[in-house]
Length: 240
Image 1 (tube, one colour):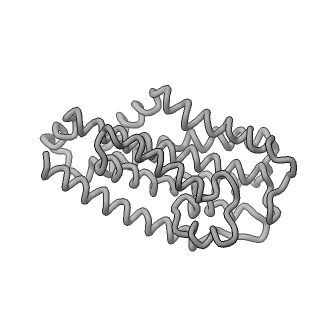
Image 2 (cartoon, rainbow, N blue to C red; image 1 turned 180 degrees about the vertical axis):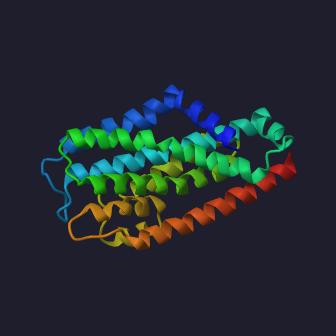
């Protein structure tokens, strides 16, 4: 399984499309947003530069794992590569877990590049906060890696890309990626994993700690997506 993870990581990092859309694109959007807002703070006193640094880092991370895992798995099913792997000694759960782990590792560049741009733009956090925020966002990306694997087994190669894009954009729009979620919309956003993902950054604000409700919610989503991925993998095995 370790070899499979290494191969998946190397293949992803060699993909120019991945580097452009999940690493460079969120960083460019971050620069655009912080210059598009006239004020230095959003409603509620949130610093614009810090808020959008987090939201664009999560935007890139979710895009990296969803597009990377779902589309690749769907194509591998079509090409027969998954069927060939089933003939080896690699157990099915190892393939699924390996895919989740590999795609989650590739979110680090998307997160760190946006953080680097945020640092140059004057975002001020302590060293423990920088480290804690990077760790929280990276661990949170495993939730969406599991979702990507489930979508890869649920959709055909022709349908997987629009399904991923609709899912990705809908969760981002209603999850606080483009603007802070408040009021009645926030009641529904609590059932959105992207909203909970963005909430992992609340401990960087003065007087606030890690949102344990968001952590518990993401853990629940991860369990659901992982179970769904395993069930869809078994269904795909029976149909092969």
